[in-house]
Length: 282
Image (tube, rainbow, N blue to C red; front, side):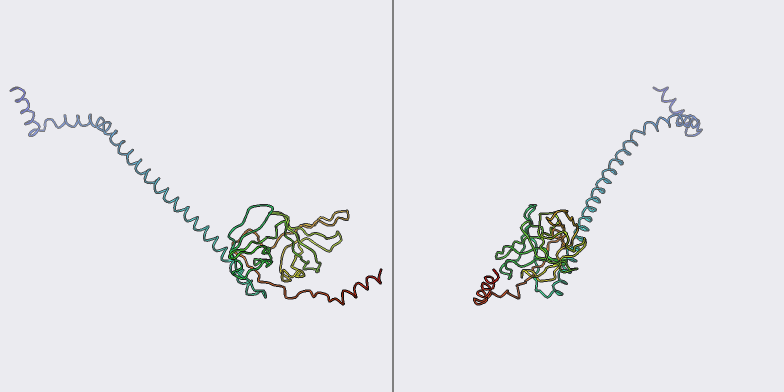
């Protein structure tokens, strides 16, 4: 032990005073440096992997938040676009109310069934608002249908497409009177009781004739979209497209229209004279 203590003291003295082991230390460092680098790689890889996964998780979370915000912005943009369209439609309805000679009442569609055969809607106006059965409903583009049933705070209206719906119309271009019928949801309207030689063209506009007393005269209704003139005497098949968008908006107008003229009933003397004329004619 004394020998090794003495040898250690000599080495310490030689290193501290004479720097005899400097070269040995440099050689040892050069030899051990690659081993140190190799041994330090697992720790560095562990730190890099930890940073990578933490950064990836953070980026993923940020991406999810940004995607959610983007979806919300898209939803808000769609809602804003829908509200803008609805506001535009309401402004047109208001303009129609101001220009029309017939008083109207704004209403909102609260229920619309999907039945292809019965095209009827429920609106939020009823007898408490002065609505009566038979009043027309319209948009800024034209007639949409007619009130068929009235409750206190709501009403049922039949649209032009309803299979039980019929409206007297005339061709705006030449004044030809006819009747327009509904066929069903998504189906074109039909002009019936028109012969093959009738003066009709694709693109002709149909307006209310006013002869039934239910609709004010001159209201736009539909446009002729197709004419099929058959060779027999059964008459032409004429398809029409409604001018009003029946299923596009939640708001419409109820025309508070009542007949201003009533057909006079013949007196008893006139009935007798007519019967005498018929007997003389026979």
